[in-house]
Length: 153
Image (cartoon, rainbow, N blue to C red; front, side):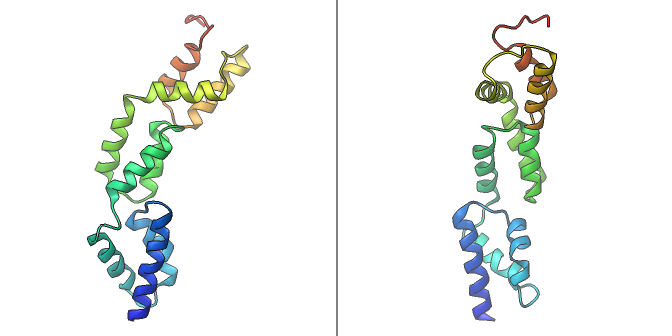
């Protein structure tokens, strides 16, 4: 048992050395290596108690890495997929709302850099930002407000 316990902790630490992982992610990834029921949960509880696993760090890491390219709804999806506390996810996503339009404008500028020439291009730019998880109202303002476009279009 002792050897397997170290093995599971070692595997968890190896995963954590690459990026922050939630407890739920580690459970999912390491479950196939568990030899006795409950040993993985115990190992992860110990790592969490020692500060190696932190939901808050996972949230901060995802927000920091992904909010540059993605809208709040896609960041929310990624956080939820990690099995994190729903209230902590809601709080983190709420913090992104204020910068949503500026972030969408920057993503638009890097990808397109110029206003749509026609309706097809307009649709393409809109769809691109929508699939990145930016809200429809923000996307409309960004694409409509692109330099050189009339606000009446």
